[in-house]
Image (cartoon, rainbow, N blue to C red; front, top):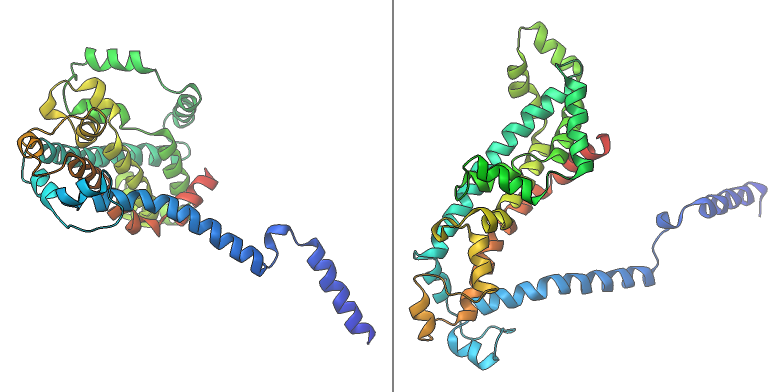
Length: 311
């Protein structure tokens, strides 16, 4: 064997020895173990969802034969969904939840974008004190439940839809992620726009926001999921049953065992099983997030990771 080949082999051996474990080429055993572990994790996530969906689509006879939750579909029925969406308490709470989610997300994004853009411009008015104030709220964890309740009561917002939006309208972490992304926009482009006579709002609307679509999509999803999934504000601030959003109605049906208004008769006579109604409401509560997430998924790496690392 020549000296050159010996040197090459030595270099390869040294490089292989210096390579960290996570950069090693996976073996067949490692790949198989990884596949088994991921398969078990996927099964643990999807199996409960499968049972909930199948039970919600089963008729009374199938649920009675299964003695509860249905694992394998047999008798197909859309009666629970038809009754839930034909009007009544659940349909009304869905409309309220959608309205709260849309209005709240637009409101939160407007405040967050304006705050993040102002904080991303070095030298803007009270830039550093405002940034320090926002950061301080992350360390002290907010005012607490009782001061928040007294504030909402003093402002006269009890039993109003504003009480479902205002307490969670601003998230400091989201503002910081947006700010980090906005700071990444080239200063040369901003300066060129200023030379052409553009003001701050025109720069924000015409330059910064179009270049930040990824992070805007991700932060919008965070706010939308937060509003859609939130039940606590409805629990403590809303007393009128007709103003409750979907998550609170879901809690009453599933945990407290109440029957939704307008469906009590068909459930009581056994035309629609109570279990089918409960699982159907769960599916309706999960559906919007499950539909929206794949459209935003492709923006997560650029929008979330880059903004978070630079933040």
